Amino acid sequence: MKRFLVLLISCLCLQSAVFAYTSQESYRGIYESLAPADFEYIFDLDPFQPEEYQKYLASPYPLLRNGTDFTFKDKTIPPGYYLLTPRKKDGVQYVLFKQEGKVRYIIPTYKTELVEPLFYERHVPTPKKTVWDKMGDFGNKFVAKTAKNSKRTAPPKAYIDVNEIGNEFWEVILYYDSQKYFMIFERN
Image (cartoon, rainbow, N blue to C red; front, side, top):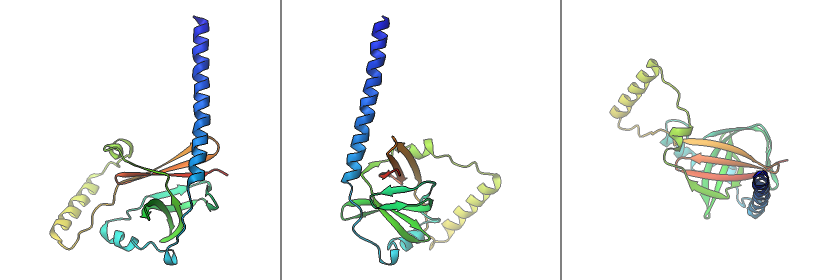
């Protein structure tokens, strides 16, 4: 019986080590297969940004604060605050890293998926509102109903997840509205 348990445990450990190795190799292959963006925006301005700021009540872009360098091929994104914006160009999904209204970096995604329907309700905390906050919300809804020219809506829900993959890569997952955008960066 003891031999069986030792054999079972050693097989499980070996299997997890092999899986981790093949996983690292597959991420290396994904990273190598991605091509950097071959375009730039004129004056580093996103042409759709003014339209989106008029459409929503607040900034529709999630804010990422990275505390370490993210390296993609020959581009290194230094630590700082960035607004992340998904965009599609020529059938390829990209995520724009913006600072002060200007596009600083354009990073391709290696995969996109749909967000689970109840993801935001389960994983993104909602702040508890005071009586004063609830009264303000009621007033805003009343004004929005009476003012017909105000067509602004709430921004899309968003969430950012950063995972360390072994000692080689960072995986950044941008949850934006109903889509998930997967990016991969090499660690320095």
